[in-house]
Image 1 (cartoon, rainbow, N blue to C red):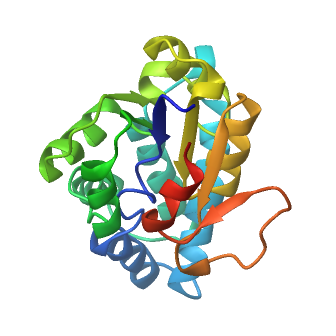
Image 2 (cartoon, rainbow, N blue to C red):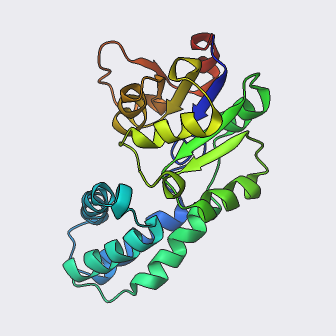
Length: 221
């Protein structure tokens, strides 16, 4: 029997992207030599993922610092005249005030099990976002606290130890197949992939997948 739910935050409870994030990508595109905004987004994602993977354990660094370096690099890469700090400030506004999914808010209210957020974030961003939306959860673990970011399983091991839970007592729900499902399962935790709007048609064998939070409860027992 499950005793708790681990829940990803950005991309699962709230939108990963919003007007602010699209705004900064558009600004780099229009001021530089990228062929389209998608090229800027791809460059951002690939560079940031590499930085994130290198910033684990003793090498951990805040996502704010990594993001600032990332903006500086893509501005230079696309020969843009934008200011990295100014763009990052816009993104910080999104991280602190992200749009929330209606079904996620209902799930948080209706759940009979304690819910804990396990997310890649600096403490200040998710704390402000949770306060902004008035969300009530039993606890929050971030990459800042654990010194590890998904897809490293150590962030889940840290969460289990912090809250005195065994892996078999928990189910984790998240929108990323690699960072949420595969990562949680590597820590021995059952996982549910929240694949909103069937964004990916390819579902690996053995993966529990739902399209929204309304489907989740039938898989939790």
